[in-house]
Length: 338
Image (cartoon, rainbow, N blue to C red; front, side, top):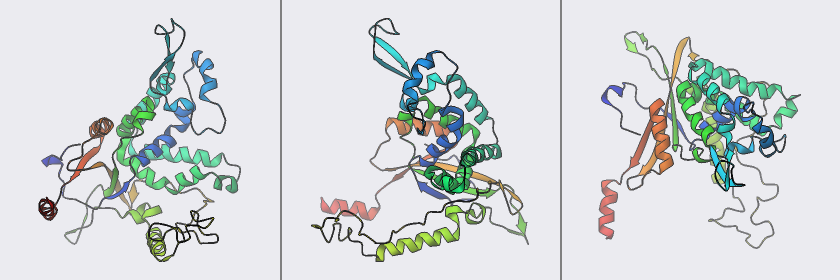
């Protein structure tokens, strides 16, 4: 991460929306967009026939078991197999090197709308595989992806083809290592490409995400979250009384009281597939900006993975480090205690 240069400072500041997801949206994009192209495919190599029994054990797997194996892994074996007394176990990337290279090359050359189309078609393909709406409703992962599809489309378009290709390259090379260390926060902002003036006054260049995206940005969703938040504060739950249960000796002290209402957003089962996101709103073209932010205290330091990710992200998109420092009042109180 770095501070912005003078020529990078723009008139439009603020009005970002964000998530403290620690890479959750990025991993979701990797799972959705790479599922059909990479996770279930291998290079046409006779060696894989021997390895297949350890990669796919069940048709109900969400991913092949070698996804969490790095580029190369060395295990004990017979002499003469790669190294004396050892043998080399090929990892996820090595088994799919050619298809990974072709897929990432295709992603890097896509424009923003083509990326949205690929993401949309990947989720829609899973939706069509279900025989009826009841079957689709039982697919928890599919329902979650459908509920966030337009939001994920906005994020994917904001990162761009080259950015996604760089991120996915790290994840396919060693998912077990690079699935962690991503920046704490993901910020997004949508703006109109061309500013317009009405009666010599400049209109707002920032797009209303509630009107354009909907989903969690809609007024109904925000109001529902606020209501649920108030209910949580008012509802006297048996397992939350000054941090412990009121009936500590009861048989169900650690469980929610039987018959008590569930607090939280109502689950929505989609009977129709969501509409595709278009990079237009109110007849005007829209551009999406994305920023990755790692949050640290003044005395905290980045670990090796966090530094790697910030270097990767800063080369293809916007990545920053936000450090918090004590205020003058806090510093003064600290000196008085000493």
